[in-house]
Image 1: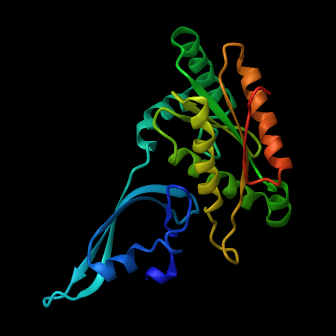
Image 2 (image 1 turned 120 degrees about the vertical axis):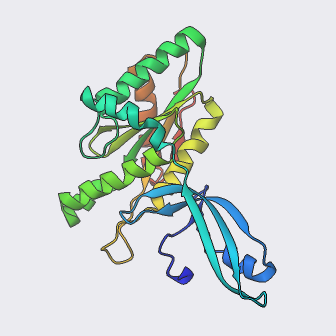
Image 3 (image 1 turned 90 degrees about the horizontal axis):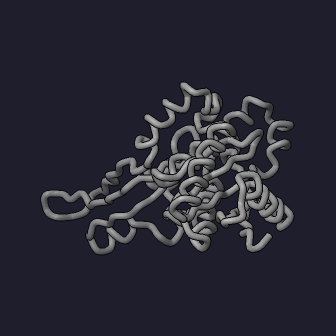
Length: 254
């Protein structure tokens, strides 16, 4: 039923649709279908982007007797499947999470830096770190910790654009590469991913087990090397941590 919130619909900003944005109530009031881009919760916790259309179901005499929510997966993940398979054959994919490993994301970064040098195509990165991950391992064990890593990586990888890339940098750290993105676009992109991670949940725990992430973003400059770009984003991530976590810090001239 709708009240069970099994899919936990959130909008593209990560806001719960059942709190003040209920399409079901609106349709019951005026009988008009509603369409939206949403993210729903997979049974294993991560967020899946969908295109949703909710319609009224009517009896023979025209009364609304129910609602149908029709949705389809709109993630860009399928477009990256062949690339991931090729990278897997080159040992560039993290076996636990299924996203690129550190060497894989470094390979992508080098390609983007070469494009920037030759064509001035802008790009940037976000450095994500799971808040309080050690406490999760200590309290629930490493198996649950691994499930959290998979949940976070899947939420990130399913909700980026086809031209972007996600890699596990190490431990509980992830790097997202935003291709063809200008400085002012990076923080909103990263913050949307942060909010979708925040609304992800693992079943089997009281209220579900959720985590938050802190992120630092940095845009490429002509002076950057791969190391300097990652270092700037990393330092901004720690600034977000010092600010209490579950936030995004922007590198500006750091």
